[in-house]
Image (tube, rainbow, N blue to C red):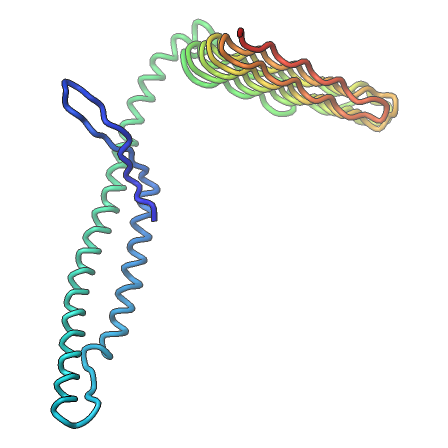
Length: 276
């Protein structure tokens, strides 16, 4: 069993060490349940053994055999008394552990609500003025629409993934991944739509990956090109280009070209990497 209250580190303030802990309420509750189950198993075993260990029969009718039986019976009763004390302590410990998990969960929820409200207050005007939040990840494009992924927050946040293109007589291109702000990864491009039918047109190209954060962040991977339909002369969709990396980030991988009976789609170009 892994104990779940972890001393993370110590912070030094004014020369005094201030230790703090990190607690996982769900895991702490699971540990309490495991301990309760263990205690129940031990209690059952002690109850089963009580009759044989507290009333030991004498091996014979002489005084020595009776004295030996009485001695072992006394030891058995002593063990049962000690076991009862251990059970009481165990129950108190499990109760405290369960209550602690609940208290941490309540405190965590109470702290999250005002922080989220504060973040919403900060993001709302920035979103209204610029079309993107100050912090937070961008929304993903809806599948089957070719919608572009939304950009991430100006400071922190990953770009949203581009939506895949719709299938049809001519496959729709996948949406481009959203760009990150200063810190974050670009969103991956959406896959190109499949071209269907005997007289189908070209399959959709994969969407380009979003650019990584200007300072730190990896460019998004390009989307996979769409698969060509039943017609043997239809071209498969090209893979999307990978997004550019940030100043200290890698470029995204180019998307894989789609499949076709005549010729596979061209793979996407990889994104520009960081400055060395």
